[in-house]
Amino acid sequence: MNYGYVRVSTREQNEDRQVVALVDADVDKSNIFIDKESGKDFERKNYKRMLKKLRKGDCIVVKSLDRFGRNYKEVQSEWQKITKRGIDIRILDMPILDTTNHKDLIGTLISDIVLQLLAYVAQTERENIKQRQTEGIAIAKAKGVQFGRKQMFDYINYTDVFEKLHRHEITSTQAMTQIGCCEGTFYKLLKKYRTANNITHTKLDKQAYYAECKKRKYIERKESHCCVYCGEKLQENNKYVQCDSCREKAAKYRKAKIFKKFKTKGDTI
Ligand SMILES: [Zn+2]
Image (cartoon, rainbow, N blue to C red; front, top):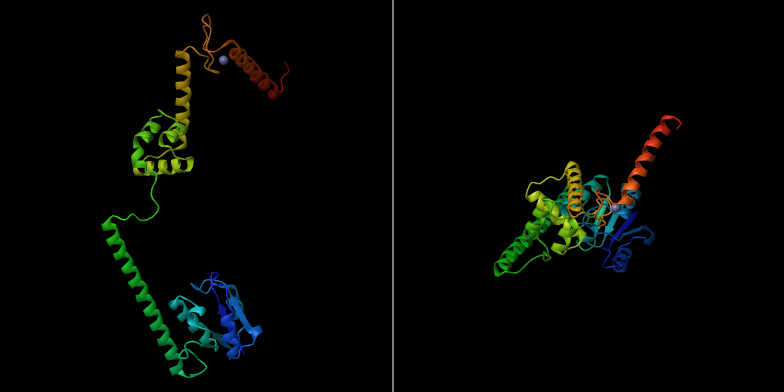
């Protein structure tokens, strides 16, 4: 039984040409499996379905080798796996790759050599391209061409801001506005700054920081003669650090807390 395999990458949508070629090569239309996936490996849904259906003596017909797979190293091992099961493969565009023609050891040898050669050529071609690219990039860089997305923000330009932030002189929101970036960028820069300067920011640091902030706020308000809770200006005759209403609230809160404590203990007041 002949089975046809067709692969189109999702970009070039049209599989008709391959299907027509397979039908011409004596493949029943119902036995054609079509994948719309990349050929970088053999993790393809319909390809795997076809493999399950194949029995000894069957033949896979493919229009061209790159439809079968693009990675020649993998093509080679896949080819060996299939032929070992007693299944033939025909590549229509490359009559030398046709295991139905040469059923003997020489046939196996020929397809093996051809595939190895193709893998070798593809590999050297890739290396050449890479080489040319690196050379090209080096030349362009020497000419002063910039590559990649332009970096808008670099933490090095803002080390003074981050230093201030770490001395708790400014808050992170203030630092953000000083740099003029969004929150995501700010934290990315901060992370870079910390890793570059070996600064680890633990939870304990944060707690100490908040305590420090609270303390500083308290002192600031006390010195400027404001209520340490709400920040309202205190009256001249007020000898406390809170305004009257805040003090009342605090007293109430304390009472409620004590009441709750007794209540949970089961005592009655
Ligand atoms: Zn107050």
